Image (tube, rainbow, N blue to C red; front, side):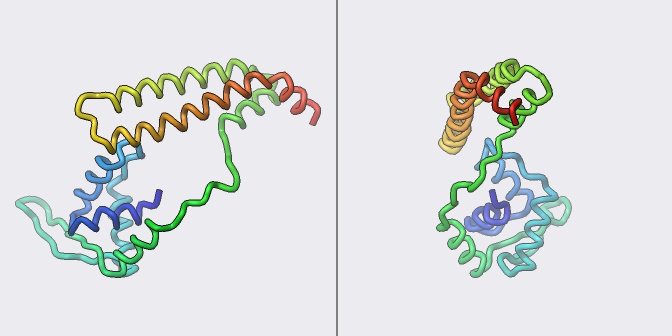
Length: 177
C-alpha cells in the first residue's frame, strides 16, 4: 500500500493535521498495519517537497503547535492517476509457508506438523476476523477489510491442504535434488 497516496486521498477531504491523518488512516484501513506518527510526518514532508501537498497554516488549540496540510492541484492529479492504475498481479509469489515446508524437509523436520500448526494459527486468525466483521456496529470498511483478509487466509488453507496431500511427492523431489 502506498502511504504517500493514502495520505493524499485522506487530504482530498480537506486540510488536516498529521495526527488526524494517522487516526483517519487507522480508522479507514482497520486491518492494515497502523501508521507510525514518524511515517506520517516524513511522508507529509516528502509530499510538500514534491509539490503534492503544502502547509495550510498552523494552530495550537491550547496545546503544542500543529501544522495543517492540504493537497495541491498536482497532488490531486497524482492521486487521480494512481487511483486509476490497475494493480498488476505479482509476477512472482513468495510464500513463506512454502519456504518453511521445504526447509523442514531439507532439515529433516516434520513438514506435516508445521502445516498443522500453521493451519491452527490461520484458523485462529479467521475466528478473530469473523468476530470483528460480525461485531455489533461494524462499519462497512471494517467488514470489507476483514473479508479481504479472510479470503486470503482461506486461499492459504486450501493451499496447505493440497500441499499436505502432496508431501510424500514433494519430499521425494526435494531429497532427490
